[in-house]
Length: 386
Image (cartoon, rainbow, N blue to C red; front, side):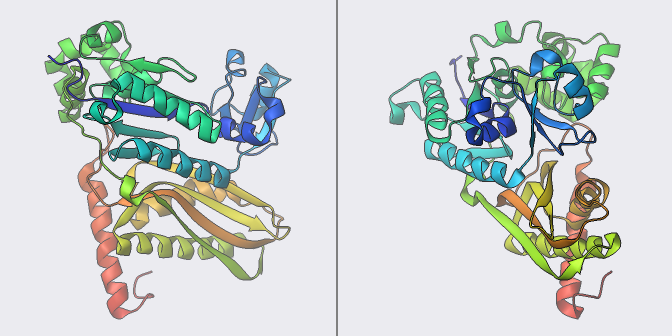
């Protein structure tokens, strides 16, 4: 078999939020730096530089525990507007190398390099190396790349040598690379799935491939598809969404300064519904979005949420705003002047890749309901549905 029947690259920015911050704070390079949701004891770590990793600090670590583990750590406030801007620049650079780009998050993307060796007069590994160097030269941040025959293996490979690494897994080296690789390294295999597989004696990827019948019983069709990808057969193609790589924002200044929580939430909810309606009318969808509240003194509090797939239905966005984003950004005792949403990456509507335990039919019903609601509002007025 050809060493690369398909050449799929997964590009993953190294410690993205922290790397972007270090562009503005170069004197902190080489030091333990923590980018946090907020800088008081109630905040959590969103990203930690590799110098902070030996202290056991990871994304999700509470600040007070991180400071106890590493008293000399430098704490920086997150700024998602800044990260979104650099993300767009990164995706544009990748788009210059291949027309087949699938943006999977604010700092990750898949690329199909198949057939590009003739144009670049280089091997696939040399093309990947050139991508690494170009990103660093133009943006000042590093990326790690996994190059393999399938998306699943490429994703595993990009995490193998960090930071600024390149791991090439051809069909000839696939079995050796995956030997003894634990199942939790597979994207989509979380703690619950890992525990389920372990219960049936499946701890490594080769064991998973060998136990296809058992995996099918445990994980269904998705499990069989994973085994196919891990066996070197490209089942999930790169979904081209680079043609619509652009950001979308929807912000509004309040008519008066506001302090009351429910009033501000209602205003933000209305703003959010306008944004999701705009997505559907344009035939586009997003996976990551940022919400911010601006205070009277023009300082703002923002947070970001990433779904498991691109979408544009009301319910999915409203749930994230209600349960996570608004409670995080709103603080009692402050006066607010403005609110808004930013979608750093939007793409044309297309097929969705769900995680192992998501129900596609349920998500598709949400979208259909939102579309029906749009039609009713257009026919009978915006206040027909509450």
